[in-house]
Length: 89
Image 1 (cartoon, rainbow, N blue to C red):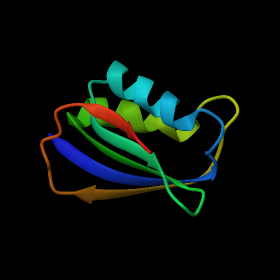
Image 2: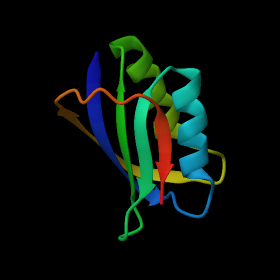
Image 3: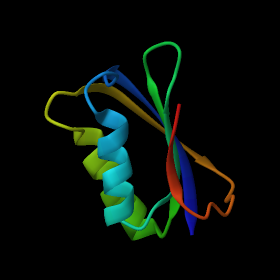
Image 4: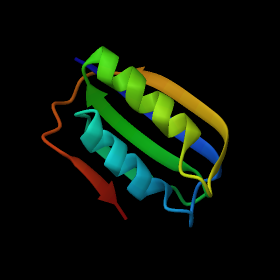
């Protein structure tokens, strides 16, 4: 099990990015959350098996068709034990 905190910068708010991330989390059995940040970026806190997490991050780095990801910063953080994946407001 591995956990990462990801900060995504670019055109990632108002384009369905959080819903895209939530869908991909379900597809890859990832737990955690996604939320908009006040500065226009998006934060993803994701936990799962390493292979699943890698595929999840690959999808999120692309984003939905209307998004444009300029920066994708990944930090390893200690495991938390999330029970689901949620969209925070």
